Length: 202
Image (cartoon, rainbow, N blue to C red; front, top):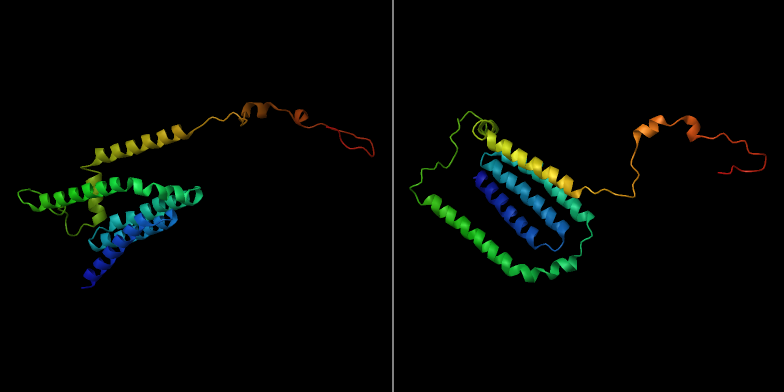
């Protein structure tokens, strides 16, 4: 009974926070609602026994991605009036996209329940093996090359982002270490003996 109550609690809060994330006028409030949705989705993952995915949701999405969104939104000078002005113009496209995604989900659910497909509803793992261990065995054995390919794709994206954002500025003096090492103390300092009552002339 307590599992059913927890499921409905987490599910309702996740749906409500997701709707408020989309409909909130302030982007900072949207990010905060998104963090709440991630936390409750992690609770749902714990209920179904996927504690590793729940941990990823909290550590990666809440601890890194959502907080990064929050800092970026707070640091940018966003014109909220301009953002709200284009909402009505893109509303039909958004509704059509939501209807398309919902139709795909309904079609996939119907195909899953239609029968005739030799698909198991759960991964065949031993009962004594934890969820994290079973997932690690699958990733580093059967899906090893796919996992390494995904890492290479992310590495290429990281290098591309650095290359695209790197700009050579002409108003910045570059550091020349060899000239600094060759410089003698007498080239940097000059002994002055000004007369009494007069300052140093540079």
